[in-house]
Amino acid sequence: MPVDRIIDAAVELVDEVGPGEFSMRLLAQRLQSSTATLYRHFAGKDEILVQVVDHVLGEVPRHFPDIADTSSWQERLVASAEALFRTLREHPKVVSLFDNHIPLGPRALAGREAAIGIMLAGGFAPEVAARAYTAVAHYVIGFAIQLPPAGAAGREETQDHRDFYSSLDPARYPATVTSAAFLPTSLDDEFHFGLQLLVDGLANHLPHPTASAFEGVAELE
Amino acid sequence: MPVDRIIDAAVELVDEVGPGEFSMRLLAQRLQSSTATLYRHFAGKDEILVQVVDHVLGEVPRHFPDIADTSSWQERLVASAEALFRTLREHPKVVSLFDNHIPLGPRALAGREAAIGIMLAGGFAPEVAARAYTAVAHYVIGFAIQLPPAGAAGREETQDHRDFYSSLDPARYPATVTSAAFLPTSLDDEFHFGLQLLVDGLANHLPHPTASAFEGVAELE
DNA sequence: ACCTGAACACCGTTCAAGT
DNA sequence: ACCTGAACACCGTTCAAGT
Image 1 (cartoon, rainbow over the protein chains, first blue to last red):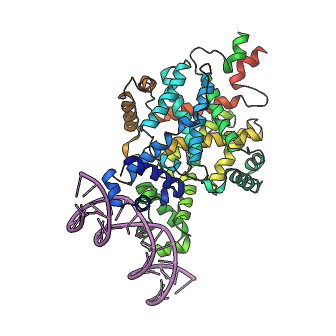
Image 2 (tube, rainbow over the protein chains, first blue to last red):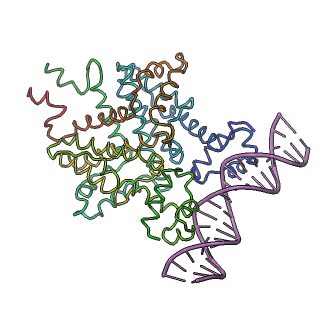
Image 3 (cartoon, chains in turn blue, green, brown, red):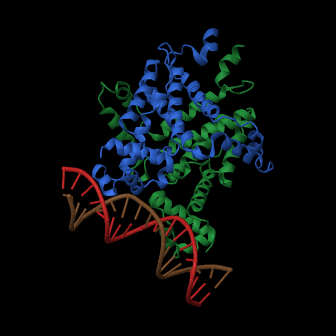
């Protein structure tokens, strides 16, 4: 019973039934084996789920568009965050497993290395690069972890939320109702908005402001 | 058996043992009752946990510092996000319950209303106000949900992470190792950095730039 | 009306026993 | 060496039976 076969089946199973319904018995059954056999390869359920997380993170590079070497750090950082987001959207039930710990498996480390490398190459100080990665990564996780389970179809859910907010008592929730009609239709748009905020804010932390948000000021000085 | 007593005990129990170990039997035992009695008041475990989330969100206003009416939208938005973050840090095991759904209970709605109200009062268009709230809320959740369980003591964990990143092979993870030494000591600092990025980025979305990031430009025009 | 013990069909994990 | 059935101590949920 190769370890990889167990992990592959575990990812499939979590994708299908979610971490709540995932059980050692179901996994053993799917592998035509028994639970005790699983315990010969893994210390327990938690260890398997840690490997599931890292396996999914291994799919992130597949979502990277081809980016020219001349691209700005902004384009590269946005592309890497969106690649992570798309990967997590394909495995919505796996995102729950990001609870209570920062993934530290080999694929997670590779992603961290790539993102911090983008910042350093962009001219940021190491301290800023590390903080920037943390901020962006947590934003992506926070967005992904609250996505409704896949079954409900993304756009319908968005519509449901808008309708729900619109239906509230305007006397009690005036700001919520006012803004509800303007909620973005697309989850991708909504995600991209916050991501762009972070990137725009980062431009102010470059040691020697070049292009970007300071263009106007630079020209006038 | 009043409903409030059940919720209070449920919050206590989740705080102590986490959602994983939380069980209807343990809750019934703590209330000197039986599980079947709990089912007379709630449809099931999930419904109780939804109420636990909303109860905890009710504590957010306690973490609001007194803010003068003359404060800027930046100060007010930062204060509200930090109030949510502090609340969640006091209930680290509850944060896992934010999985897979956006809280829509009365306390959650009150928080949403307050934050969007801050943005509208600050002069933002309703569309931007809604997107800004979504971005900030997801950032806070994303940060809070990956916090290690309380037992391990916050600062030690941070130290552990720094040591771990520093100990990696510099040939394989050059950017990670380089930046590791500069990781913030305080989780609050790390949280505040990303939050400030979002707020800075938002200033660019004001319809008529007033004070803030455009000060220099405004003075020169 | 309100509560309960016992039951059902499940868990994660372990271990003696088989090949 | 590798695998397994059966066991242990748990789950969430239900329901007949008690007061």
